[in-house]
Length: 302
Image 1: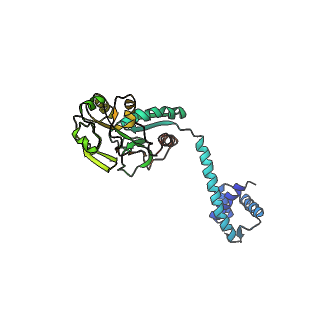
Image 2: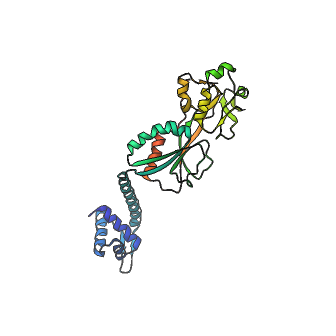
Image 3: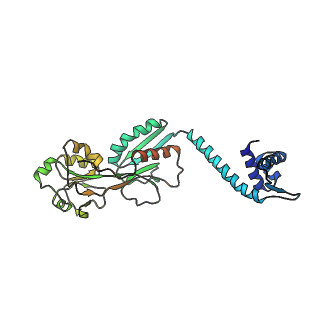
């Protein structure tokens, strides 16, 4: 007889308190229930159940065996569920939101690999620097940069967001080169509207943390627009390295104050805590964590 089936029958007998009660729950005859119990006892060479004319109860060994049976059956069920789920390929629509710079550069470049690996998934990507509401606006996941204020959401860390301070050669030709955060107070600094506060830039360097109040002729709510203004020589820009690195490589922007780094900003992918993690959502989260692992960025040669 099948050992696992006999163990299931034994558990039902223990829970029901009788062979007849277990037989009714298992849609099995009482004689077959008794046969399974007898099979276990003969195999183990022990008595699992005390039988009297009025009641049945577990022996001491039967009580211990019951606990182990429940554990074994739970593990078998978990393994079967895992195997069944592995055959259930991710499929369906995923609504994802991301900030403009990350969404239009790194994320947009990574998503084709995810979609090729999951051909039955469709991603609806919304790119905005506005602080969207994951639940009310119907997103499956959102990517957020900066410290998390809403702790009710489920968060997985991604690669920290590295910032770089730059200016165009034309701007630097007309203005003194800044060497210390305090020097920025005398410069035209291009502001990003979604930072709070937008006019305070914080740096870490040889003297520890330094905060400077900056000002400038332009505040924009999109990093790409700030980049265009900086390339024209309008002022100094502080934006993600992923947005500016190509301009740096081609000499169109010059990194400033290399010994002073703007604080690295954390980045997370957020999902609703009370929403069942479907295969499609789980696959996307794991893909992004693997593609953008939550470790500090390595120093980049200027």
